[in-house]
Image: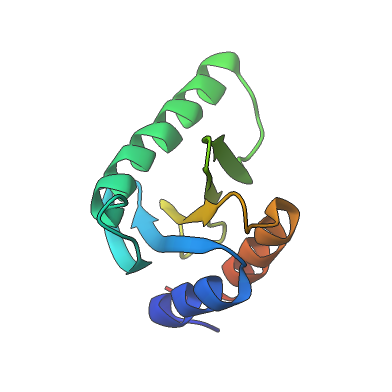
Length: 124
């Protein structure tokens, strides 16, 4: 089982094109851990903003009566992908993995696959 630091290091090394990664508590909007980022990508700001995205989608699903779970949320920008992977499991309610990827270097399918694998091994 991987801890937060190990999981974020794994994301940054196993996923091509990672700009930054974070483990976020969407009940508070706080990043529990971050790795990478840049002057143009403040991961604390991204954690709070993406918390709003997750909460909005969960509310919408509830209003629609959808009895399903979010696997991941993809936001495509001109030069980046932002991928949000909700953590499942009894001990991990309210958490998501977030990675920002350089669109020119990233393989989106592989990134999703790797995040799923990292999520399965994460112990918080």
